[in-house]
Amino acid sequence: MRTVTVKAGKGYEVRIGRGLLPEIGKQIGVVPGVRRVLVVSDDKVFPLYGDTVLKSLTDAGYETDSFVFANGEASKNLTVYGELLTKLCDAGLTRDDLLIALGGGVTGDLAGFAAATYRRGIPFVQVPTTLLAAVDSSVGGKTAVDLPNGKNQVGAFYQPALVICDPDTLATLPEIEYRNGCAEIIKYGVLDGEELFSKLAEKPVSEQFEEVIERCVSIKRDYVEADEFDRGLRMFLNLGHTIGHAVEACSDFTIPHGQGVAIGMAAIARASVENGLCSEETASRIIELLKKYSLPTEMPDYPVTKLAQAAGSDKKNTGASMRLVIPQAIGNCTVHKIPASDFPEWLRKGGAHE
Ligand SMILES: NC(=O)c1ccc[n+]([C@@H]2O[C@H](COP(=O)([O-])OP(=O)(O)OC[C@H]3O[C@@H](n4cnc5c(N)ncnc54)[C@H](O)[C@@H]3O)[C@@H](O)[C@H]2O)c1
Ligand SMILES: [Zn+2]
Image (cartoon, rainbow, N blue to C red; front, top):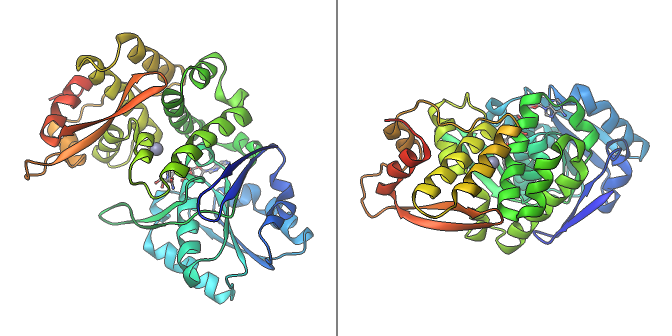
């Protein structure tokens, strides 16, 4: 087992290791005084891993219950959040009890926000079962649900009490979800430097899950510890995300997040070359690695105006600025402040069409 300690909130461990899931009853012993546990999961993950988790908890002497919702981003809303709170109430859970988020980022964000707000906060444990959740959403304490007018519009910073990541659960992950996670992992490689970047180029992530997840979690941990409430440094984790989000939004979210990030990283690398901020070689290494993981690197056919609108750079107030994370070299990214009115030109240089 590999352990990364995060000094945020009350401080917690991220434990990564094959075979941890059937041991979860023992693992959660680090959270003191718990008697009852509510397992929150979606209707794809629960049939796969729910019984293993419930059995392990029961064997360890916990009283258990579960809350299962329809899988997918569409469930990360106020209605399902309300149903989960009602379940917590009906089950009579108190601040001495525990909630477990068993699933991907949707489950973690939703269950985490319920844990943050039910009775002003009950402890929760993240058990990520997607690669994206393992390397990103389960660590750092951002919890949220979506509103009809935007993603993650209601939420809280609320750190888990423990994160248990068992890479064995990734065996059932659909190929597309694996690739989505790899896009975020490549982002960490660009932020961190040659060691991780070349590891990803040498051998597929799937052949080195534990090592790669540990490295990515450590990188995220450093940003989170330096900037728990996302006021500055954590912005680096947005590499590829500004253009990526715009692409996702223009596709009405039919392009998944990981693919948006891949396109966004390729585009910002190309635009940075055009603006003399990044070498051709660095940009092509990033693009080649994305391609190696079968991730898209070309801007889809959305007009620049629509993309700029989706990124919020079309605001009438002319003084507005934007911050872009620039990959100057592998392991050397910088934050570049630009007038929002310049963003369409960055999009064009990144390969967007008129
Ligand atoms: N809190 C944060 O810091 C943070 C960071 C990044 C993303 N997010 C959020 O995370 C969400 C995306 O997370 P995600 O990509 O994990 O999505 P997800 O939770 O919807 O999971 C993707 C799909 O994979 C299925 N699945 C999960 N684990 C599986 C397994 N082991 N085997 C088979 N199928 C499995 C799920 O049922 C779902 O259909 C978004 O809502 C995003 O906003 C949050
Ligand atoms: Zn992301």
